[in-house]
Length: 254
Image (tube, rainbow, N blue to C red; front, side, top):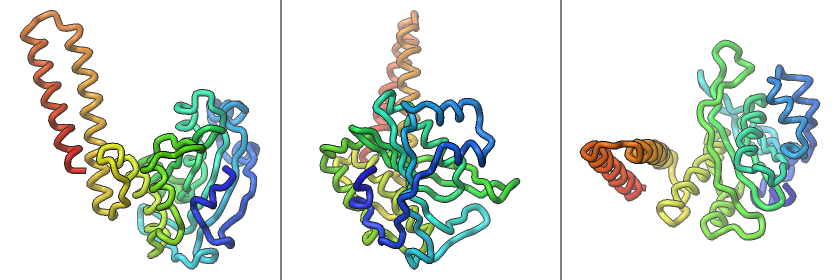
């Protein structure tokens, strides 16, 4: 995406701006037929760009590793797509890129109208240390290129390299994830505020529980529509109201 470094403000020595060809994935990885079809569909993937590589040599941020995670370099990659079924295709694109490139990646998927940022928690595959297992995925909402709202603009401003935790490459990468979660929180709290790592984890657990409750409510509502016995329908509605109250309680804590 043109101008992504106006958002990220990465040091010049981190910038690469190299194209990643679709052939790179086909040559180097054992792709599924669905993944090959994804790469071959120009309406889904128009271009892949390796924007930057942030490592000890290019940024003076030290590497970090333990038995489960390794942060030797952080990559920034953009993928250009179309506005055809953007909601579904952005998920597929992120799965492909994050699955086969083992580094921590700040991924930006964009079309002419909007873009999203994505990060992942990737664990070292215990059967093959060169591969990673994706533990969790984090996405922003769609951000309009022409007119981000106030919370989105504050979020974009917070991505400035100078403001991120550069204790090591783990804290640096996690700072991106924390901001993505904080933007999700802003949809409930009304205000975007970057949170600490501990608070971010608390917020994430609450957000995940809220999503679970919403799915449970939807399922119960479908049950209630089909229920023919009045007393059972009343009980289902009581349960639905209890879950709505739980959502309100959790939202107030965020």
